[in-house]
Image (cartoon, rainbow, N blue to C red; front, side, top):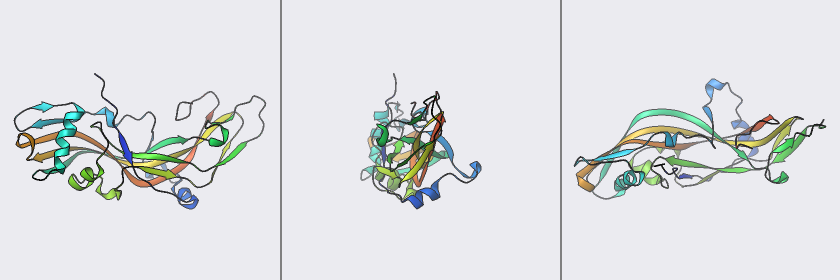
Length: 232
């Protein structure tokens, strides 16, 4: 049976042109997080969490693991998380629709094209907290009760990364879109629960993805005939 995709929640933040320019990837590749395609990346779903209660019952459905995890918000229940794998940071990239040209790519693929096409865009994209237990991320539980992503500094459940007016230039034989990125921190944790159902439980394999506050902007430009990040 296929697992439902995890719901992602995020944070609201606006960025000036200067701030976005400072965040553009100009440093060496070794100094930046790994780039991932936000449309196709499946890290959260690549591992499943499970819960084992003190009475020996083990459950693997996302809803069952989430039910156990939500006990951490209850009085009389104490929880502690231990990081078992620090998967590091990645920059998740998404194409920003171009409203000027019907929300599609800037297409300079006419065989007779001889001039560059330049558009100036102001765009945003929602980036999200994520976990692999199939429901909206309870940011308070994750940060305050489990201590995961505590350094992110975010308390809301949704976020927009917004550019200022950014120019994108597409040469003849190319198509392209503005792309927006956000740095995300990935961890795999075990959670020990004392109290609550059956007296306690152990959750293993909880995956979390936390926005860490760095917004980036760049251009997704490919030769005509190839696909952009979003598959167009």
